[in-house]
Length: 269
Image (cartoon, rainbow, N blue to C red):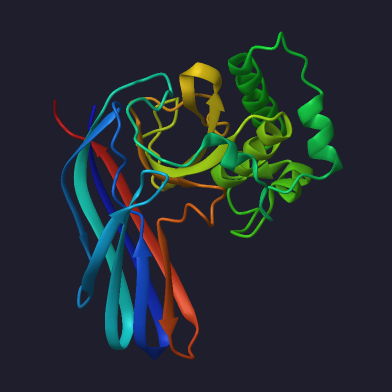
């Protein structure tokens, strides 16, 4: 599948900022399931700094902008060729050992309810079967409902609420997988459409679980599937904060506003 992606994040400030420093993880991953063409990252008025590939295999680049500025836009455009690998992350070069992803964070810290849920599954000992079972468990426990959780909602809070968005599904799945001694991580990216073909107009997130000889396998509990050709992978981390596509610091005293626009369209074959 050939996908055209346009993504713009705009920050507005009620008082002009003096300077801005950002670290961007907005370049699609390199692996057998996707190939990137004509990818552009632009910050009008900004200065592109050095870039590097981190231990997780993600491309990270720095940007700075000198103020005063009342608005800053981060613009991404390009197209990606994708193919279905049944969720398996083949050909992705990284140096971090999978066992590092057993470490819990504030967002993925388990409580009693998550511990009981994780241990409730009985399996034959097959790790892939267990991973699929855990993903189905979270999909059933958390209904997809935008607007009921926030950026800082934890896995335990979303699980108790029984509602949330893709970030909450990913955090909860990561938590129960780690409780069963399966390394798991958070993945940020894009989704062309949901399983029923409806347009998906926002950036997306899912989990990857390390499964024996298969390596990393993606699981999207929010859509009850493994990533296929509709998905574009950007980067990963221990949780949503660690895998954030944009991280940075603005120097100023005013309040910040955020607007995001994402379009993922299929190109003519």
